[in-house]
Image (cartoon, helix red, strand yellow):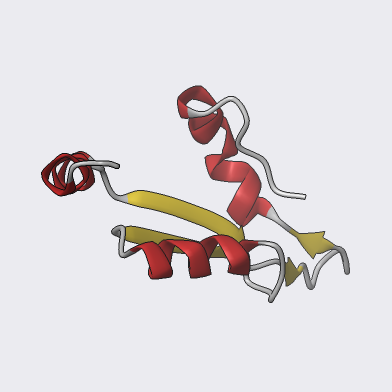
Amino acid sequence: MADKNTSENKRQKVENFTTGYWSIKGLGAPLRMMLCWSGLPFSSICYDVSMDSSTGKLDASCWFAPKKGLKRENPFANLP
């Protein structure tokens, strides 16, 4: 059985998690729910895709612009 003090000490050392997902109800919601349930500190970033009025195409630059920097920190960072 884990010592309560050891568990509390580990929890105090945890950094703030950051989650990121498209601003839709989707696969990001279960992770946010688990973090809420666990009581761990976290922040959530929602990426909005908009319609480019000049081209009529979807503009996802809100995700692709920061993606390079995030890939340096976490090579597995990606959105479906």
